[in-house]
Each structure stands twice: as structure tokens, then as C-alpha cells.
Length: 146
Image (cartoon, rainbow, N blue to C red; front, side, top):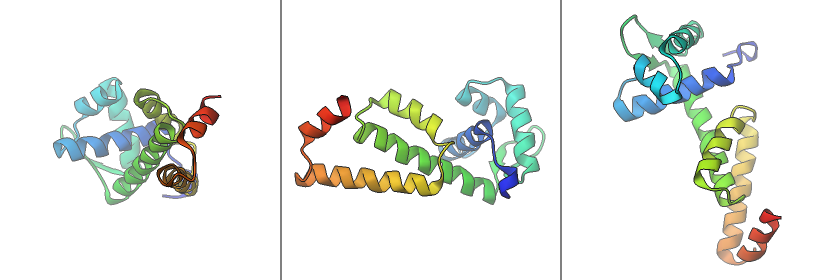
């Protein structure tokens, strides 16, 4: 997909939802996507038409929605950023599960894959430092909580 065809935050959420549902249920239906994202079914229909026009999903009327090869690649990339961010927010910034999940969902759309990789590397460094004693767990928590 060309830079000029950047996906909106909403369309990225649809790709992520379809990926989740395909992995969980083997298929993604309009109804399930609407429920998963807490949106109305006509919104899902509009989004799938947009995603289909970009070549990111395959869909026939009254059928399942499937990610195309390119759609799968993008959805996995978005999920990877999400997972990296959630781990950072929870493990390094010490946010609770719900807040880590919610904020990762917001941030994942605004950063590049390169930035996500750097956050992952920082998270790994901090956690390794805590494990080896190079960083003091208590002092780290105090710094974060200020």
C-alpha cells in the first residue's frame, strides 16, 4: 500500500479485529466485528468496503470477511506494535492491565514500526536490568511514580 493510502485509526482497528476473530473463530462476520468493536453493523459494512477497495480484505455479500495477504501483513504489524506498547506500559511504566490495554490501543496508530522496536528494546533493557540487579526495583518504581 502506498504512503498516500495511509489507513485511518478506525480502519486499522477493523484489521486488528478481523485478525483476532479469524484466529479465534477461523472466520470474521460483520456481526462479530460490530460486537467486538462496539459499533453498528452498517459501520462494519462501510469499513469492509473501504478495506476491500484497498485490497486488504476479501468479502462477498452475505459471506465472511477474510484478510488478504497484504491485510494480514498490516494487521500483524499493528498487533505487534500494540503488544510492544502494552508490555512497556505495564512492565516499565507500571500501569494496570486495563489502562495499559486502553492506552496501547491509542498509541499504536501514532507510531512507526521503528519507534515500536526502540520501545521494545528499551523495555527489554529495563527488565533485564531489574532481573540482574543493575537497576533497583524500588528506585525504579519511585522514579516512575513521581
